[in-house]
Image (tube, protein in one colour):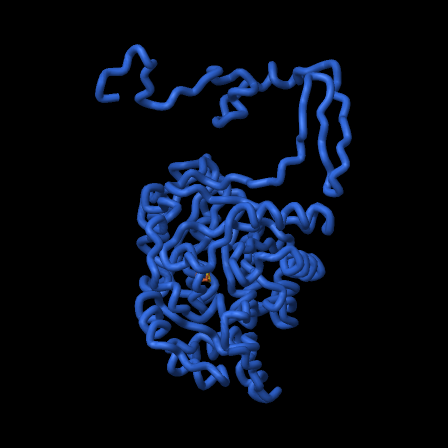
Length: 412
Ligand code: SF4
C-alpha cells in the first residue's frame, strides 16, 4: 500500500497551530484516533498491541509531516508503532547503556568524570519508536521535584570535577519555564559547573515551544547549549528552522545528534541532504549514533558496516564542519566509541601513508623529533590508552583475574 496523504492547506494549518500548550494537550495518544489525522491509515491488531506495550503519542504538528501512512514514509516509521516492535530479539535489552549502574542518586547519571546527566522527566511530545529510554519514557511522567533538584545540586557540589551538566529526560522542554528555571538556577548555583546542555527533540516534534520567553530564559543561564535530534531532512521544516534560528539568535548554540535508522536515513544521499539542511540553518551535525541495543527496535537497526559506508561517502561530499562523528555507545555503559573508515594505510617512523576519499594514496613525511617537550612537563594521569602512550601508565593493562597458562588449574 502506498497511499499519499491528501490534506487541505487549512487542515495542515490547523494541525500546525503555533501554540505549544495546545499541541501538548491535543496530542494523539491512540492509533484509533490517529486515523482521523492520517487518511488511509487503518491500524492492525498487532500495531494496537504494541502501542499498549510501549506508549504512543504524537503531536498534531508532527503527524502533519507524515505524507504516506506506510513504512515507506520516514516520519511514519519514527512516530507510529509497527508490529515488528513487539518481537523481542534475544540480544536486545531494556537498559542497553547500563544507566542504572551509573546513577549514584535517583535521576542523576555520572558516567564520565567531567559530566553528569539529569533525567528531569519522562514526558515527550512524541514517543519516538527508536527511543533509547523506551523503558521509562511515557511511563514515568512527573517533572523534577524540589527534593530531587536539591539532591542533584548537593551531588554536583560534592563533585567539582563535573563541569558539564546535561539536562535530559524524557524531554526537559515539555516542562514549564518556571520548573525549568528552578533546575537551571540550582545547577548554576554550583560554581564548578561550567556549561549546561539541554538534550531535546522539541525543535523537531513541537517547534512552537521555542518561544521568545524560553530563549530569554536560556540566555539568562548562559552558556547553555541545545543538542537536538533531527533524523531526516523532511523534519527540517520552515517552523523547525525558525525555532532553531530563535535559539541561535539568543546565543544558544544548536548541535544535532541523529540516530542511524534502517529505512529512515541509512542512505548517503539522505544523510548528506540532512547535514546540508542543518548547516544552512546554523545547526551543527554533531553525532550520528549507531542505534543502541534496545528492546523493540530490531526492525530499525542497521549494521555498523552500513554506517561506515555512509561516513565514507560523506567525507567526499561535505566539508568537515558538516560531517557528524559516527559513534557507538558501548553496551554495559562502556561509553561512546567513534567508528571511522580506515584512512591510515601504513606507518613507519619516517612516513605515514594515507588514502583520501578518492582512493589516492599519499605519504606524509614524519618529523625527525619524536617526543613533545610538553610530555615531560605535563605527566598527569588522565586515564585511558593516552596514558599508556605517554608512559604515565604501565605498558600493559592486565584484565582482572588473568592467570598465566602455567598458573591455571583444571577449572580455568
Ligand atoms: S523525544 Fe527523545 S526521549 Fe522522547 S521519545 Fe523521542 S527520543 Fe525518546
